[in-house]
Amino acid sequence: MAAVRRGIEAVGAGSWNRRLENDLLDPDPGGPWLPLLYTAACYLLPAMVIFVWLLTLDGTPPAGCVTDISGGGCDSQRARAFGAMVSGMPRFGLALASSLVVAMLLRRVGTTWKSTTIALAAAVVGGGLSTVMISALTGQPIGG
Image: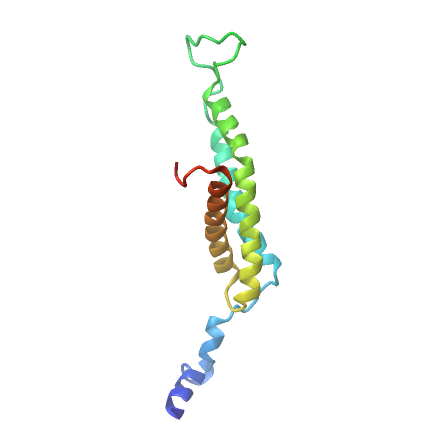
């Protein structure tokens, strides 16, 4: 038992002696704010990329399009994509908010986890949690 303990306590030799547990600990936990920042980045960076891509879509209505009685119905690709993005903002906000709550809980529980690990786990769990909550509230099946 003592040999195993010595093997765990000191890894390496010479000036490289260190405890094995030190490799597993987050050297700079950053408090509760760094995981929240990384979690928000997991949502906002892809959203910004999609928004920039949206600006590259064609902004002119299709050729030969006939409008309906109210004068609408001939939306460009960009207008349709922008409308879909705006209509999805409440779901996006719910997913972001639930992920931030999960990140706070994970930081409190998993004090040895790195901030990036907490952020990724919170983004995945928070996104899934918001999907289930939206499905329960709307009555629509998940994926339907």
